[in-house]
Image (cartoon, rainbow, N blue to C red; front, side, top):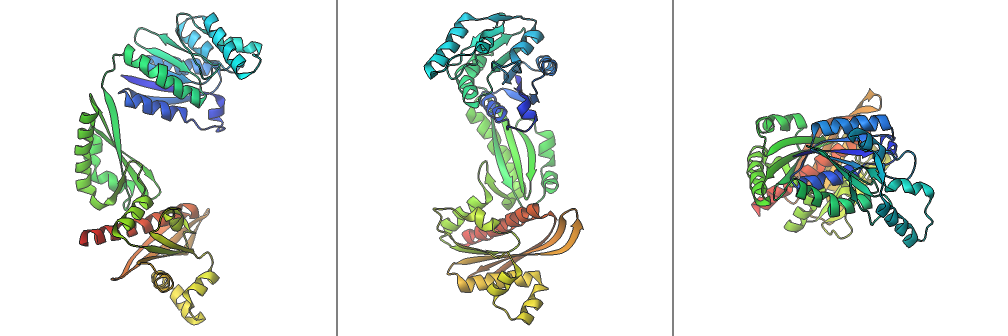
Length: 415
């Protein structure tokens, strides 16, 4: 069974509000084995709404609309569904009584235009709404169903849980069919390089299916399985995860909602190590990601925002400072060494970035260097990066954290 969500409201298209309803509804459908094939946003225009709804019932079995059930002239969901399904709007006195009761209970006087909310398409099943003044409704066709619910998130969530999902389970005899997914989080390679290593799995595997999603310095690999039970879906996902892990190994840093910085802190705590950070180009992003009010492993974060602050911290004479600035890796090493002298921590991470070329349109090429001072010596990495400064800072902070993560994993294996 498949479904489409239609989020209604011009405010969505204008960017005035973010459509969180569709993501909530999508999760609820997946949890009950209903495959979502499309989400659509449409403004408060009756003709366009008609076109979108008509197209949806031609393609899917379940159409869920959210929004457009208010009392004003631009709330047109009732009219659109009525026109598409050929069912005139009919006044429902019991819905009117419920709406009036809500106003009375809340101490407000009901306006006359609220009567519009008591009209639903002829033959539709009312969805009573104890949380608000906008009832929903269900229109059943021969091989499709339209469920229209309010756009107010608290009302939408209540009706999804108490009416929509129970109805769909009864109507389509949904028993134990589930859709489950797991996200493997990867860094250290770009999306294209990751894609090459799991290309066959993405192309050939249908259940479970495999897909990727990229963000700066971070790749998410989603494994989605459909099965009759949660246990079966979990087994399918675990087998696919094992195959992907056998190919990507240490590049995988986390699962689902785990974060790179969160796992670094956990590993520090597991090994009983403390860390200080001295960073320049990243403007404090590394320290910000690692810092937490209750954390004790990350003891110090020093951000050097100017050349004068860098010079003072390195404590070098002018001639020596000028010489070392020509070698970004040497600067990074010196940051870690000075941090080791200043801070009483087991590890010190030094990060330095030098802009080597302005590429135009606020884009730059930057040589980024990373040095990790440990009791056994210095570990180093360097990466040339290109792009806009905010993106470069984010990428550089992720590289630094990933370098730290891999070093800690090696220490954990030796322990």
